[in-house]
Amino acid sequence: MFSTFQLSLIGVFVLATILGYFLIKNVPSLLHTPLMSGMNALSGICVTGAIVASFFAFSKNDVLAIIFGLFAIVLSAINVVGGFIVTDKMLRMIAKVGTKKASPQIILTILLLVISLALIILTGIYQGKVQDYLSYSVATLLSAVILVGIFFMSKVEYSVLGNRLSSIAMLLAVITTFVFYGLITVWILYIGLTIGSVLGVFIGLKVKMIQMPQLVALLNGLGGGASAIIASLTILGFTPNNNLFSDASSLIAIAIGCVTLSGSLVAAAKLARLISQKSVVMKGHKVWIVIFLALTIVSLVLYFVIPNQIITAFSVVCVIIFSSIFGILFSIRVGGADMPITISLLNSLSGVAAGIAGFAVGDLLLVAVGGIVGASGLWLTQVMCKSMNRKMLDILVGGRGRKKEENMVLSPSEQLAMKTTIITENIVDSSITPSDSINPIFEEEKKSLKEILLNAKKVIFVPGYGMAVAQAQHHVKHLADILRNNGASIKFAVHPVAGRMPGHMNVLLCEADVDYEDLYEMDDINPEFEEADATIVIGANDVMNSAAREAEGTPIYGMPILNVDKCKNIFLFNYDLKPGYAGVENPVYSRKSGLFTFLGNANDTLADFIALLELK
Image 1: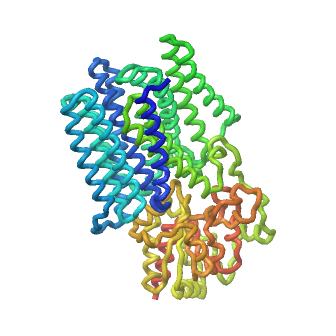
Image 2: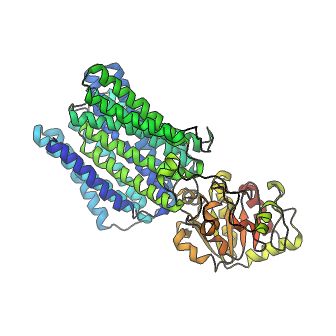
């Protein structure tokens, strides 16, 4: 049924997925954003398949196929170059690279790269079976280098090195493809590589850290689109492989690639606020999702059941259309705060699409790297689901909703306190606007505020999506420096799903020059809230909503949260006191003492508050 080589490809995919999964599990959650952009870069390995497909199209003088092949090269090159540059930029902010001692792993990796380069040279000299074995050896060694690079990504001090090792391996993979197929003189291939690389450099250098969620979503889509194009060209006969295994792999890669492309474009548009970030649910949405999934599967089967040229062409077109619509339907119903799960899943699908495209073209390295990327996204998706107490199926097809709970487990007095402005000894008027957020405070309250913070010995900061929207991370760093210079111990508590993608808060804080050592994961910091003198919340809500412990029947119940409510003094810099995305009232806001609220744009309210602290 399967040839030895085909079984080898399947075995490599399974092994790479397993190894990648267990290595990626060791990457700390504080590095999840660079991990995802790094995986974007690796999913660009489909550039090797695009190069091969483009060459065959060029040799057959098929203009349309050449255009699509070059387009796939451009998309892949953007992923590779842009992904690695952005990842390097983030990791340099986080790791603050210094001189590192050579470790046995580094020495081994350099040795693997040297051997790979030597084998690549030999691949250009020998022909036939020897050349095949040499190329397989190179693919194995480069896969090992990429795995070592991921291993280094789990060590903050070596993370930059790990990313750069993976980028070198990717460069050698492209060189191997040119040497193995004798494409050094095929000038047209360099056009696609140059355009893609230039665009990748431009994106990598220009993108802001606040834009990382939409960039990662976009790169996911580019990877999926490139894989779909490669698979389409393969099924049309523009690669060396033309058999049942290749055709089946191509159709599956087309379906997954189109789902990834359309779903990612919707996700990127939501995150960039080009379309509404709210969940868009049509009448019978679940049914439509199931229908288009079923139509995609039927189209796949139809290709093999009726071996007619017109029917097979019709089947391929139907797979592209139905799978693309399916991707739009599942992505558009996901609301903004559920995007971490969606982005992680799409990241995984981009890797799976690349790996299966590798089956189609018979590229061992493409299969291996695709498996690694797929494992990364799958593991991150599991982490996000656990951190949000959500099931992935609920988010994608609409299970348990995020409807606002009007009758939470709150006492009447607590509900009243949520809806009215109350000034007590320790609560600041919460109806003030950003521009005059400090002025309405009485002099004795100003004194109380200053005394609490300037006498505090331990302060915990809790950043959230509101900080990202307001781009207030630099004011947060300024405030932290003031308190630290005053003798306070400063820590930052980061929830795994704060923001719109895994690890986004960490990148923003490190961009503002917050030391990585000051960033703490939820499980590590939670026991310390009770003993802290003050907690400063900036744009966070659901991740610190204590209703998650007690309000049974609400969407947030059971979600792991930061124990902010256990702190004696809470300084809240949120836009308002409305419920977060979960639609559940936050009992923290009803506290009668120890709560200081500064509502409005966090960038403005923090600036005013810092001015208050600096008043003599």
